[in-house]
Length: 193
Image (cartoon, rainbow, N blue to C red; front, top):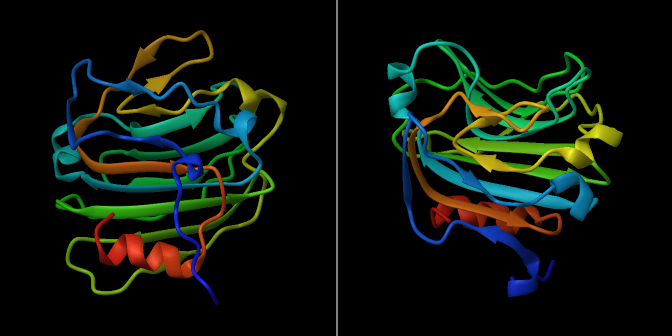
């Protein structure tokens, strides 16, 4: 298989430099309504999530693109007191991965095809292997998903109020407007983005 080279038109958003979030009021609004701009996309991120253990409460979003009204369509990677959830949520339908709390360099990748989350990959700090997580193949999209904006470091309710601020650092965060091939994903993980 011939690997495709990224072009600037492949990238919808890229965090310009490693960015620290204070857990008090820092966040980035990317302005991207993922389910409105493309049927196919890929998110790759690398982050220090080790400070999540210091935060109290559940569902502290590392990133969030969910319309917060039943059935809660969208995707998120968010921590809690004991675990982090990576993937999609649609009316009680989470794709879940338990992440240890001392992850100083955690990498993740979410691939969406035709508005379905098809693949979720991760690699923990100490791991040598990239893992593909089980995806239960329910759509992350409904008509309300178009209203959700991709936010880094916080949650947003359906009225636009921000909260649940995350403490940590993004080393890299990229949104592609297409599905990445497996070889491209492996390269991102192995070269650390």
